[in-house]
Length: 212
Image 1 (cartoon, rainbow, N blue to C red):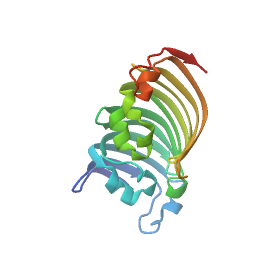
Image 2 (tube, one colour; image 1 turned 30 degrees about the vertical axis):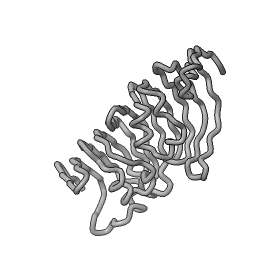
Image 3 (tube, one colour; image 1 turned 60 degrees about the vertical axis):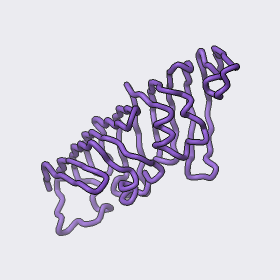
Image 4 (cartoon, one colour; image 1 turned 90 degrees about the horizontal axis):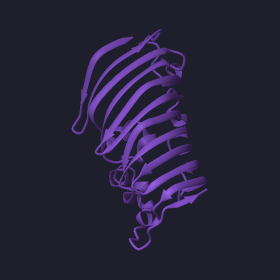
C-alpha cells in the first residue's frame, strides 16, 4: 500500500503525509497487531497538531496540552520503526530527535529510544505543554538548550540529559514515572555554576554551585 500527498484537516489540526507499507493487503489486514513485520516508510509535515485531538487516537500522549508543528521521516518494520528525523516546534520549544519506535502495532506497549540534540526549551511554554510538570516551577528556567537520551514508555522512562541556560548547567541521569500519583522521580544530579536563586525564585539567593 502506498499513499502520497494525503492531506488531513480538522477544526484544530492539519497534517500532510506520505505513507508506504509493503506486503499489506488492506482487505485482509485490518488490525494493528497484524502489521508488526510490514516494511514501512513515513513522511509527515504539519504546521499544527492539537494534542487534545491526537490524544483521542493515541491515549499515550493525552498528558500533553496545546499544539505543535511537526516534521518527521521514519522507515523500517512497523513494529520497530527507525526514526530518521523528528522536529517538533511548539511556541519557543524546538526539539530535534532521532531513534526508534517499537510496538506501534501495540500502542499500549509503545517503547521509545530517542536521542535529542540541538534543541531548545522554554520553561513557561513547557509547563503549559506538560501540565503534570507545572508543580516543578520549570517556568523559572527561562530558555535553555537541551541534549537528552530517552528510553522507555511515554509516561514511564529513563533519561539522561544536559540542560544549559542562564541558571547554569544541570546534568540528570534518572527515571520518571508519571503513571503514579504523585509522579515518582529517581536518579542523580550534577550541576555547574547553578544559580539556586533563579531555580527557587529567590533573588536574594545568588549562587554558582558546582555539585554532584
